[in-house]
Length: 199
Image (cartoon, rainbow, N blue to C red; front, top):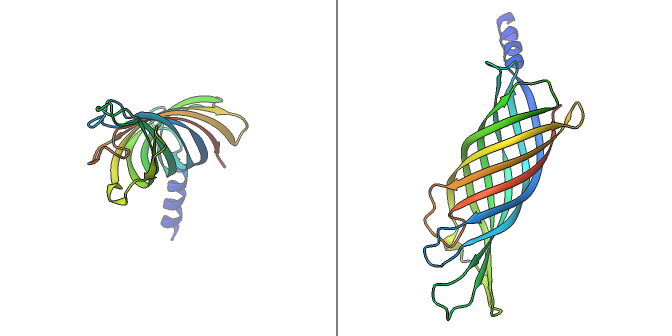
């Protein structure tokens, strides 16, 4: 019994830093332009992230694991290769679940850096389109996919109070398993601003 208590106490000291972040921002995305001259656009995203990190640091670096749920709206402009067809705007709603290994420079100061890398689950949940001639419609569900992505993240943490932090971040996401170019099949840049609580 005594050994179990000591083990729990040891785990509590090694993995003891919890962070909860509400975040949102803009995103830029590009499809694989297989059927058109362009397939890029801007959108927005928001979500909730949680992170558990090691305490104390290891070789001056804190290790952490971050996951959560993001909702993304990706907007695309298509200029068809054939001029008789009108320009088309496609809007895609995605559910994204990242799982990132985070590296943070150990510091007691009010400013430090974090880097993250890991997979993400990308689920197309809804899509619709409109064109320059007034046409519109819903993307058929047969084109929806659940894809595997890879995220690379850079983040700055700015302390506002002992428990409240401001976290601007830039994330690069690559879609690794996409099959169809009509949906979110390419690469994304996420420009985010988060408000983090560290109890």
